[in-house]
Length: 162
Image 1: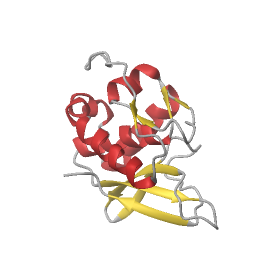
Image 2: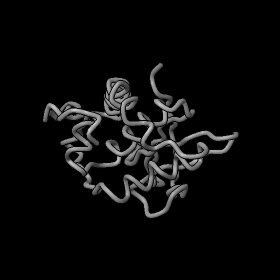
Image 3: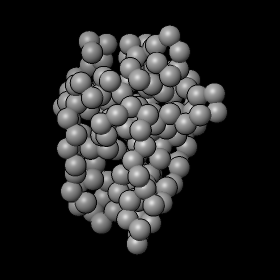
């Protein structure tokens, strides 16, 4: 990815004792800050159609990045430069990357936060959803398969900032 510079090597720690709203707020702000970088690299992911583009993004993440879960006390976001440099991140970092690229390519998309716990609506996982011809395309490179949604009990969809 020679099209972008080196990262500033700074993690954006959300806040101590953060709640879901704090995490979502910083995810949205980080995605918005990444838009210039995303425009520089988005053409590398362009497929013959939007579905192929989504698949290329998923495949790139699966081949090149390692999933590392962050502790609940150390939730961070990363710039695209930092994520690409580190070659690792948690579901937030993956989702921010995907939404940033989709936005740069004008593909409608949103973040989906889910809880897999029947007794708690508190989301513990996030991924990107693209909308293509009225269909939801799941881009969650933390999972094994493209366009395969993890099971959940509760979901919350969040639109990127304008």
